[in-house]
Length: 132
Image (cartoon, rainbow, N blue to C red):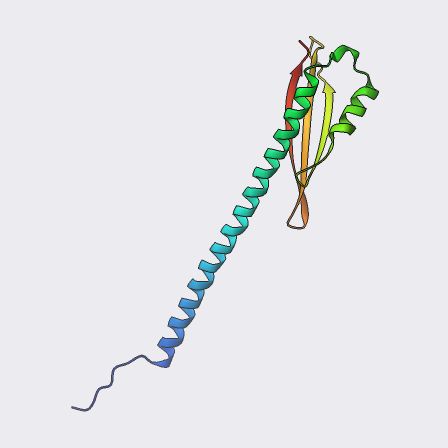
């Protein structure tokens, strides 16, 4: 009986290295995707907070206004005054008279825009305000 040396061949070592490298790359990609997803969720959360803040501000001011005396110019001035930047996000406020029979409803749209991954994303919050 001769000496039988048992060990790994070069081919087995190379295959194991390739499999391990592929696994490590997949894990690193998953972590990277998770970090970007967390960033996206934080952006949306911040956007919702900025939109909610502006919506509450608009709602608080509209509750003291008689809708029947609003003119197109008054509405435009109000929209211009309330639109702007909140916490680094571009916010646009739009008011619309609702076409319902009562005539004392106002639709409020708050649009929040932000830059994301080389583009622009937007979120629109909509509610109705009643003149009571």
